[in-house]
Image 1 (cartoon, one colour):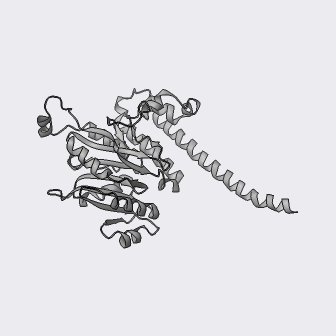
Image 2 (cartoon, rainbow, N blue to C red; image 1 turned 60 degrees about the vertical axis):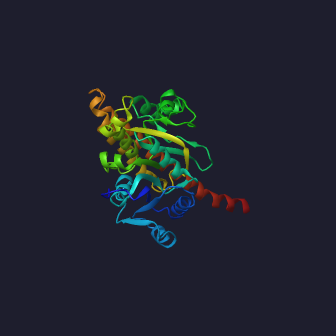
Length: 327
């Protein structure tokens, strides 16, 4: 982080990888959002091969553009902006998002009113306006089994997965949660200075869960606890705030390389388990966790390959059928 006093209310940090059109729409939504707070925008380009950098330079000269020589992943890519961020707050924002009017101001106002809140997650909506489950409880063994194994397919409406996704409430009210999605993660500058940015051991996925975990386990500074009195919590809070609304066109970067992303997703799951859960896992169960994660990853990759060949074979059959029908 830059040293000294913050010079604006908010630093918006956008990581980009080959999403030129989406990035342009995202930036337009930011600068058309009619905000009453001061903000800066930093775009970090992760070695894109499209016209992203040229587009930013040409159409958004007010944006600070940082260019990584290679794709260093989600956490490291976002962290590259931290030395340049000058806001009191930071908003890590995916390039495949659209910010609705007034949302940035609402986030800053809400955080100003609640100094013990370290991280805020806005409401995320899918492209069709439906709710995206963007705040969740911390993963546990039961949720993992019933979401990421055959049990999840046999019992799709099981209570363990529903509990993890927090489907027991309509997401229309403010609520303390365990973690919020890194697609739009608003964080207090002071907290970043205390616990650091994203853990770069996670190339992609789970780094948002890890950041929120570290926040909710980090002690509030003494000055805050003293100011808030006896009722203050001992640690920073993570809160879901639906007044701020952001559309998220989920997966528009990662779906370009599904096999690689599948590998990284499951690798990150194991890193998170090893970092935060392994010590409390019964010894007899510890070897089974990585095996289960590996089998799940392998099954998903094989499904991608199967679907690829099905599409290819169907595409090859269409010309033959047309030829046969005309003879």
